[in-house]
Image (cartoon, rainbow, N blue to C red; front, side, top):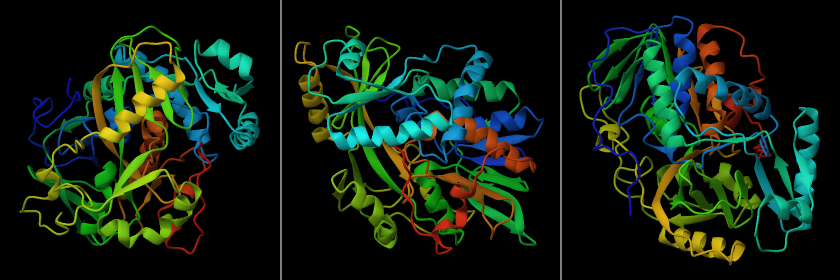
Length: 448
């Protein structure tokens, strides 16, 4: 069984030392950090990206590889529509094949309630001139060959795309480097430096970088970094298991999901498979601290989350993970360069059962890779993308809630303009930093 493509034992591609100063410092070398760096560099802004481990080694390369407008929260949708326009442009600039294909995303419905949910999204899709449409049972049988099961129908957005995350973000990093971005791997950001009430610099494990603008795009690690600076956000991280099959005959060229299993055709001729809506939450200090804010999400999907009482040592919300350190002392980010959770055996068995149920005539599925990733969540399943009011010069973009890969270029472009003082071009009120402390009720995202 092959291991996941990236680990902390991989050779360092982007070595230090860091520059003495930079217009912008980005903490986190995932899809959000790298795309933001690209759009800043296009405006001749000097950018330094600090990555504690390896570029794209965590959730940015471990996701399903869906680039979808379908089922998005209505406030995210305009940004996702922009991201869908930007992806092909970035691929042209990269001049690398990252598996970007316009093969559509399909959701399957086995109940009247699911069909009603699709009908509700169809109204949103129509308002945004999307090509989303409903399929009956006959149309679904034509679309996905040989699939068993009794389905009421389906919803499809043919213009949605797929790509290979483990290829895409490293290719984007190479593009960023060609545009002049400084990327430093194996270099954790330890603390922020403040002067006269504003951001003045970043202390990294390789030295100090003077800057007036910092973007924190640290995924599952963002909350821990902010907590060190007296900033609290109700972010948690859940583990999701994924597997890739060996090459097999094509039964569907795109991506699809029903209530038990999701699948996507891969560039290598196999399929990426995952349990739909199933994840594991490790109960740590933050999980208890923020539990009340997650009650609406738990009520909406009480069976989607399974619990573990103790996170492995060094995890962001682990009981023994340090919450305090100094610029001179190693941080928790250096103790775990790459967050590489083990896949759940029960989820892998669920994938095998689900695939066999849908395609009983096919050979039993054989995995060539299996892995897990930690998805950074917010209580309402939409991210924080905002300036931090108590730390002028600091932007936080985190809690992408499993949507970050597809929407990455759109968010990157927006954050780039925010940092430069330009108009974002989209309404961002929903993603404000203060929504969990200003008395606003928790409004769950409408993402399907």
